[in-house]
Image (cartoon, rainbow, N blue to C red; front, side, top):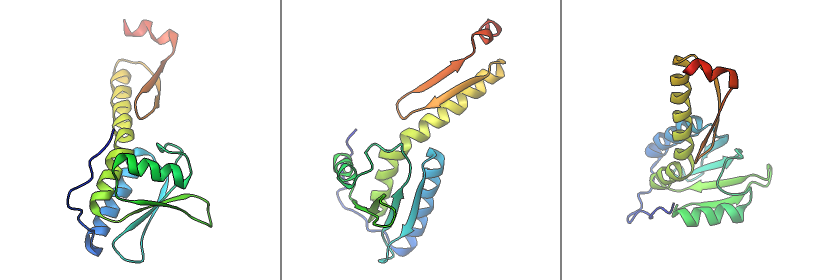
Length: 150
């Protein structure tokens, strides 16, 4: 999936950075991603240190930079010299929105779908285990529970 970059990037202001930061924190939580978010020294950009292993890129600056380029997100990737983790610098509200759409939304959708599926099956007396991925769900029902569904 390749996103088109915004035609007129809207730079985040200090006020909008706080609002966008909260949206990003909420999306990371919903997607069950581990990351740390800090406001940059310029007061407008956000630094996102990725800790999750569910990213669409390997834990390297080169792979993260290539992923940003392929998805059309106006951001940069650097290496935190203390933790050796990739840090994405998102300079605008648009870049945060695109980051959410490209990286987090598939996981949010999959987790929401898994929750609903689990609820429906539980309503029919079936216990299940659902493993969530960005493009698929893996459902495990015990053999002895299949007769209960008939």
